[in-house]
Image (tube, rainbow, N blue to C red; front, side):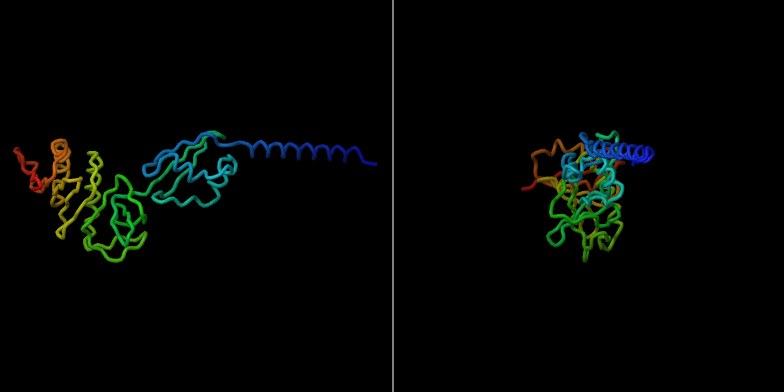
Length: 242
């Protein structure tokens, strides 16, 4: 004969178990339906959604939370890290922290991207839009996550300064060329802009911005190395290609 106390205990255990199972079913059925992305430049929002939410389980709220907090994050080229912020059980935001890239060099068939300190942060077979190709630098063997081995490391400060000025003035260039003396030139289609040394670079780039509409459709070299902000008259020249 079953005692009433044991019967009640079994009923309580059964109810608790049923509630746990029901909660588990409910929780496992909650899915992420809205994903916003911020901080991304090199990847579109759709590309990042595809990389981080590859299958149906990745959109499960519980699994996504567990995966983000307790498993290693996905390794994504040009992305330092990312964070998934839950704004509700069905809505998340992906905050992307991209690697700081100021330029790239060509090496053994690959494009080696470096940051403001000259550290090689990524190797790729693809050219990223908006990142200038830097040529003319003399370097030896290149290794990922190691400094680009150049004789004069000050060149990286100059590259950073130049790329920031170009970005500020919304000027896109095909290539930044350095000669053996560290003088810089910009290649923009059929136009070469000889900048010379890093002196008065802000004024040179500002002047270039003003001259770009005039240079549209032309072919030749704009010499801005003689630019002098103290001069009231034009202190540079443009030479058309023959």
